[in-house]
Length: 386
Image: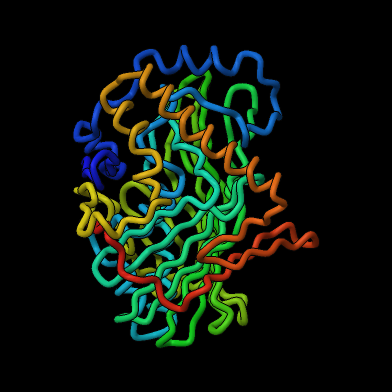
């Protein structure tokens, strides 16, 4: 979607990632021979190297920034899982719904292409129903993104602080996602703390991409804990096997008792089995939650902030969708050069940059970033998710 702001500036929004069964609905903006190009790009990179500041040519980008991907994992849904979290009659009902909602934030992506590295101070501001979502790039080196989302009607708040650390492993790239996610159900006085799985990009012998690692979800007020493992098993030489697996358990930490066993696939169905009664039920259906997603629309063009991702990267996104790789290269260089000039000017003036929407701190003891929103509620956005 392309919308003009003013006389020349355009805002470009694209469709969220779909499940594999709907891949034919995605725009064909990917360049040919991506695997060959990727191998050529990485041939001089040593295993173990940190790829955080590695610059990708536009042929390896899809038309979104990292901030947009973070935001989409919250506001791009076909069903309102957040309301289900809030409406649960018991702490266990609510906790199980939170586990399902956490799984819904795990989204498909495509092999061989990555989002843009967000610029310092870049923002992404979108509303979906009563949920207002705001993401800001609060640090550049290291890259840290902060998310604040609120629903005043449901009295729900989300606060995320994330730092991706991609490393080259020789035949694969593993992007560890550091940081904490908080979901607060204010009506119930409950806070849920959780982390994110890591993204594993397998280059050889068989190209593929999946989310892997352990996700822990805990509610200090109720003592309920979930231990979820994202797995991707492969048979000999990487062929066959099962992908996108989820295994885990929900337990009462005060009694050290397992209440439910969790099993399924994050891109299909996830079930829980009651360890007491043996009853099995579905808690998450990816087709219901993240299928049929549509491109967001712009309700108020003039209210879009100058720092909005869809505006900052508009020229590059349009060039990628048009497969105009020369124009894409120029557009990407323009954005990067503007950022270098901005950083250089601040350094010369001795100015310290501060995020507009978050108070940010870093703990050397725990190696964790803390991102506290400066406002209680996120305002309604000019961009609307459908």
